[in-house]
Length: 210
Length: 210
DNA sequence: TTGACGTGTTCACTATAGGAAACAGAGTTT
DNA sequence: AAACTCTGTTTCCTATAGTGAACACGTCAA
Image 1: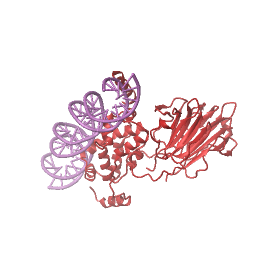
Image 2 (image 1 turned 90 degrees about the vertical axis):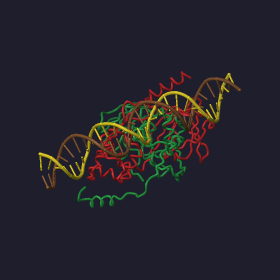
Image 3 (image 1 turned 180 degrees about the vertical axis):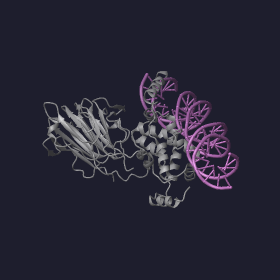
Image 4 (image 1 turned 120 degrees about the horizontal axis):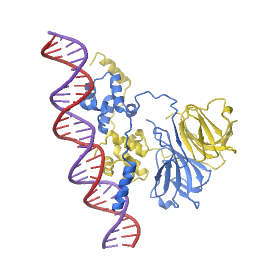
C-alpha cells in the first residue's frame, strides 16, 4: 500500500505541478475589450454583475476568475469565448510555427490496449493531432467499449499487421503501408495480428468551429 | 459615461449577439470526453495535475472550476476550449464514412521534384489530405520557388533521410521515424539526402472551416 | 471467504476568488 | 483653495474552489 501511494505521489509530482502557468493573459485581453468599447469598470460591473474590485483584479491578473465569472463576462459583454481568449495581439498569418519530434521522443500515454506516443505536443493550437501507436491488444474482447471521438482520423500501418474493427463495417485486415481514413465518431478498435506488436501512425482532426 | 452611448448601443446591436444564455454543462461534457477516451479520474488527475476529488466535483457540477483549472484541463487532455464547451447535445454526425487505400494503390501525381501518392481520394469531404511522397529532389536549387499552401502540415519520414528547408528556420535533417508539424503557409521544400529516394508521409489540413 | 486493489464519492481543511467599503488620484465645480 | 465626482486600486471579510484522506462500492486473485 505504501509502495503504491509513493508511486502515485511520485507520478503526481512528476506529471502535475507544472512550474509555469499558461501565459494566456486574459486579463490583458479583457482590459483591451473594455477600453475599446470605452467602458469603465463600473459599466462592466453593471453589465456583468461582477464587483468592480473583482474586475480590477482580473484585469491585473491578481486572481483567476471562476468559470461562472467568465460566463458572466461573456454574457454581459456580448462577446463569445474565443473572442475573449484570442491573444491580445492580432494573429498574423504566416506564423511559421514548427514542432520537431525525433523518433521515439514523443510523449508516452500507455493504456492496456494501446501504447500511444504523441508526436508534436509542443504546439498547443493545432488542427491535427498526430501520434504513433503500438497496438498491444490481441483480441477485440480486450476493449470494454468502442473507441470514439469527434472528427476524422487517418491511419497508416508502419509495422506489422492489424485488424481494424469498426461499428458499421466488417473487420478489415491492414498490412504495412496500408492506410485508411474514417469518421472517428464511428466506434473503432485496433488489434495486432502479427507476432510482434503492430505500429500505426494516426492523425486525428481536432474539434473546430470556434 | 459619455454622449456616445447611442453609438455604443448601435455597435452592440450591429455586432448583435445571441440573446440566449448558454447552460453550458461543462461537467457533463468533461465526463463525456473522459469516458470517450476510456480515462479514469485518476488518469485525468495525472494528466492535468488536478485532484481526483476536484475532477469528480466538476463533473457533477458541484463546483465551478477556476479558469486556471480549465486551462489545466485543456493542456492535460490535449483539447481546446471550443471542444470542451461544445454542448453535449446530439451528434448527428456518425456518418461512419471510411476510405481504404492499400499500399501503392493511391493516386499518383508526379512532379520533377516530388512524386506524390494521394492516399484517401475516394472521400470528397474531408478535413485532412494524406499523401505519401517520394522525394526525388537532391538539391534545394531544383525548386524554383517555395512550396506553400494554407493550413498546417504534419510529416513523418518513412524511409531514407531528408533535409527540410523552411523559410524562417535553418535547414533541418530528418531521419526515418522523425516527424515535424508546421504552418504550411511558411515556405518549405524537401530534399533527399540518402542514396535511395526518401519517402515521407504527409497530412495537410484543408483550408476553410465550415 | 479474505485481502489487496481500483473505481468514484464525500469529508474536513486550506487556499483563494468574489464583494462591500475604504482608499488614492485626476478632473470639475464652487 | 476646498468640496465634489468620477476613475481604478487596495483592504478586509465571506463564500467557495481545490486538496488529501477517508469512504463505499465494485473486481480480481489467492
